[in-house]
Length: 390
Image 1: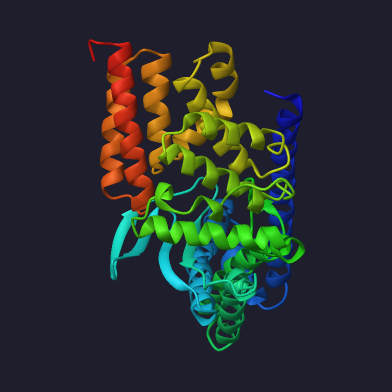
Image 2: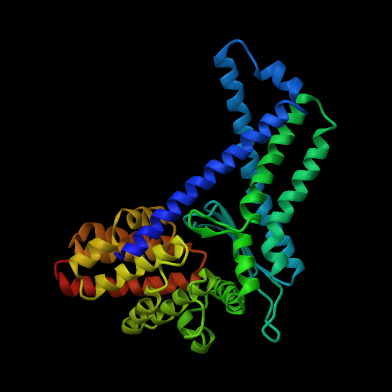
């Protein structure tokens, strides 16, 4: 793998650690301030204790309440996207917290399991049509942060009306909301994924990024409805030379175009798209880079199956990412190819094929699931040709 890419990975890791330390320091300062002002009586009475184990236990209780508050505010955050998206003319597609997902399919709400590594939740909606290249995107992107702040302020005001027990509980819940607002309202990448403010800033600066974001939401909505990429007009997502693909939102167009050719079983053109994207991987977010590496691995597995290239791509970081992406049907397809075409392990390959079929049955993106089932059959046939005993 290119040294520049490895250095970029290392840099992101260090930046993530620095950010985590700063957040912890900030929360420590806030708790210290509260313990000497609004919650002084509570801390003196219930936390500061001569018996160390009791003091530690009380502090752990406070931390658990804070974590609970943060988890609650993840749901509130996604609800903010939903509410402000509806206000802006968007239509509901899916609402996810962790891997628990609600989608709307054929006018009915259904429960699914799906997750994306590096994300705690997601509210995806079908955007309104663009008019003269314009559409509303600010409120939809900032809706989560706005909800976190509004709810946190209201809860702090409520906290003043109650005893120290409830006051502490409400304030810690609000701190979870403030943390959620900060980590989404200050432009940054967390775990290699651009947050709401980061994406919004990208769209304000770059017209192509706005179009790419609109396209992502539109394609996601169509795939959820059961539409196939191969049946969509190619001109809709044809790659252009004069686009800034260093921008992570624009980089995502590579995957849409790649999947279009994949759905058409045109592996030559699919690989050409990945090769076009290669020079931009060092600039994009780690999630995009890992997705690119995953698909490059697949192309190598069904192509030349070069051992050196495969071992270089399938390093510890990619193994960890694929393992963490257990609800993504495309990763089952990659593992079918890896175990069957590279490792020549019949049993493991068929195991992943069965997992692909099981996952595809209730997959939220029905159009993508149908494509992956087709590719699963293609791999099974390829394995049979290579290994007649299968």
